[in-house]
Length: 202
Image (cartoon, rainbow, N blue to C red; front, side):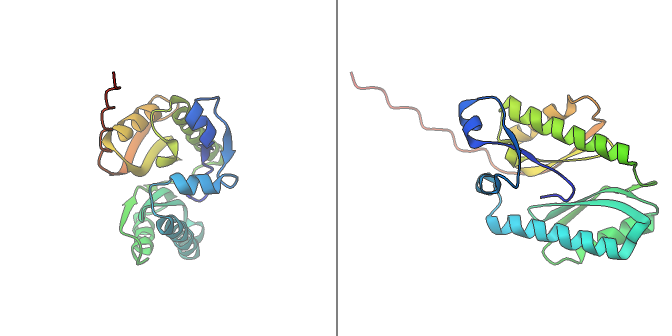
C-alpha cells in the first residue's frame, strides 16, 4: 500500500506446502493480499486513499523542500524521509492530522538534505531482503507485516501478536545493512489455542 514501495508476497500454495518461495508483485495477487489482510477491506482502501491524499497535499505545500514517504496502516500514518527544517517537519504533520480519517501520526522525518538515489535504492533492497526472509522463515504470514526502510532504518507496521512482532523484529535486525528497527505495530490478542484432539476410539 505504501507509495514507492514494492511489496513481495508468497503465493498461497507455497504457504501451505512449504515449497520454494514464489515472489510476485501485489498487482498480480491483489485478491490474495486483500483476503489475508487483517484489516477490513474498507480500511485497506481507506489507507490507500490516505496515502494518496497526504502525499498530494505535502507535494503541493512543500514542493522541493522535502523528500517524504507516507505510509498508512489501519489509519495510522508513518512519515519517513527528510526535510530541510523543523518547521517543514511540523507542517507535514499538520497536513496529516488535517485528514479526518487519520487516527494517529508517527513523524520520523529527519532534518537533513534529501537522500541520494543510491541510498533509496539500498533501502528498497533492504525492504525486499527482509520480506524475502520473512517468507522463507514461515514463522508468521508475511502479509501481516508492512516493511518500510529509510536510510537503513527499518519500520515495521501491522496488526500482529506480540510473538509475531518479536519474530519480525528479529528477522529485520539480522539483515546486513539494517541500522535500527522501529516497531510501529498495533497489537492483537493471541489466537485461542486449538482444542485438543479427541482420543481415537479403541
